[in-house]
Amino acid sequence: MAEKTDYEALAANLLKAELKRKGVTYSQLVEKLNAIGVDEKEVNVRNKLSRGKFTAAFLLQCLTALGTKSLMLGGLGFVVKLFLIPEHAKCIVSIVVRSRDCVL
Image (tube, rainbow, N blue to C red; front, side):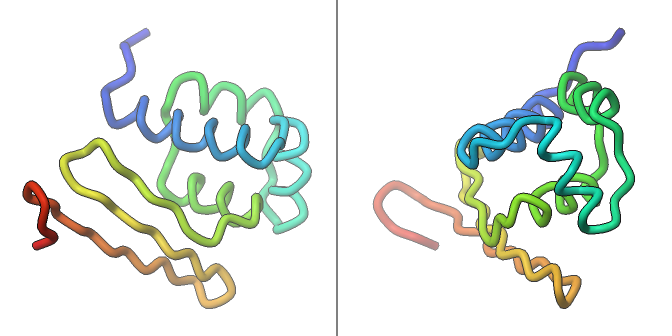
């Protein structure tokens, strides 16, 4: 099996961290996904997260199921803030590029 790319690892770790932060198990995530109409099995969720191979739609579905309204990504040389508005099928993205002490 091919190794995960840096971005696949980042995506998987991001979702795993959110699960940990919310205190949600894979089994509970599956229940929450089912509650919003996403049909997943626990084994499939485990495989997706261990491989880091899943779609952006799956990531957004998981974040919605977890009740996550915003998320910040750092360590990429810039900061990305995601504001999720699932009831309107929107995701607002704010990107802040930092150069030393100032925001560009």
